[in-house]
Length: 304
Image (cartoon, rainbow, N blue to C red):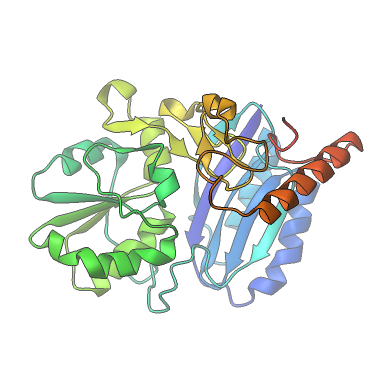
């Protein structure tokens, strides 16, 4: 079993580039896999590894400047969730493209998972899912609004076009682990919306803490690793990944006529050219060859 830790923390890093190599080396030494993004505004990522390795790297991260209060959420995976470890430098640890957004200055009101149901059932509350369309497509909260965004960068434009729908409403927002809501609530506050709330710890915390019998969540939650989705109790969900478009699909979708492993699924078959598909087939061939040489790839790439 692999311990999976999802984490983020907004703080000020004066020289993120100087942090990258030591952090990469530490992760490698502890047999940690996954992805960590570092930028001047902080750190974000999901990592997996043995229990002792995860404990050690979390202690290391909390010793970074301003990170002593870094929080994380844990789950378990029966298979390796990541093929390798990457520490990447970014302009933003979650990309919104709004230079004046600063979660360190101010965010919306945090709502604990146990109090979320009561809030979102109030008649004067509009509940907005800040995730991308393919994430919303496999699960969301009852009565929530789907902005149908392709990326988080699209959220400000969507809000500007739809803000009049929410006059005299309190706004409650949620996302996978909480990081997108740190920025989206700060953005709404900057637009003059004062009654803004967000789910502390995101969907993952809700699914961990709230019993299924009392839940207002339907479906599964997309996660950015080889598990693809999790459900109540953070149990691994049924979804697999189309390795052409990176969207979640169900096992039955592999038997549809449009499906070719690593090349296309029913969601993307018409979105790519024949040249694209030929490239994907060649990529899949090289992955299979590297597997035969004993090289590691994410679970799923080597299937057929």
